[in-house]
Image 1 (cartoon, rainbow, N blue to C red):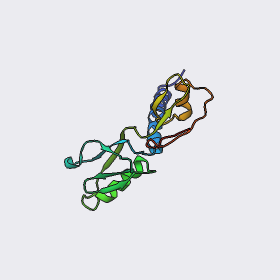
Image 2 (cartoon, rainbow, N blue to C red):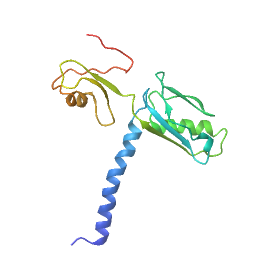
Image 3 (spheres, rainbow, N blue to C red):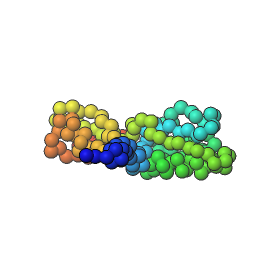
Image 4 (cartoon, rainbow, N blue to C red):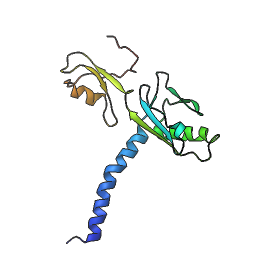
Length: 152
């Protein structure tokens, strides 16, 4: 017979096992141009704006922070940059940066496949998965930035 304490512990482990992968996935995700970021500063209503689009140059602008280069950075790194720059104007700012919408990681599946087209690759999937979903088994996979055209 399983004790109440062991059941509570097992339940807590189940909850943590579903929550923790989400945190590590967001920390591993590298922000790309085209992504929409949500940036908020606690107790600063003037700094609770609409979603911030990361344009093709990989930088974005935020009030009191200026231009931020997001290329190659995850949300934790961006949060640290924004926090550091805001600390010049706000005492101990509490900043939250999240990816509101992933639009920057695109692959284009073309050729003799069941479902050709543009496909957004989310965390945990890659071009191989995308091609398989599009009906291409054993296809050669190549990646290109969303603003680059591939010609054969």
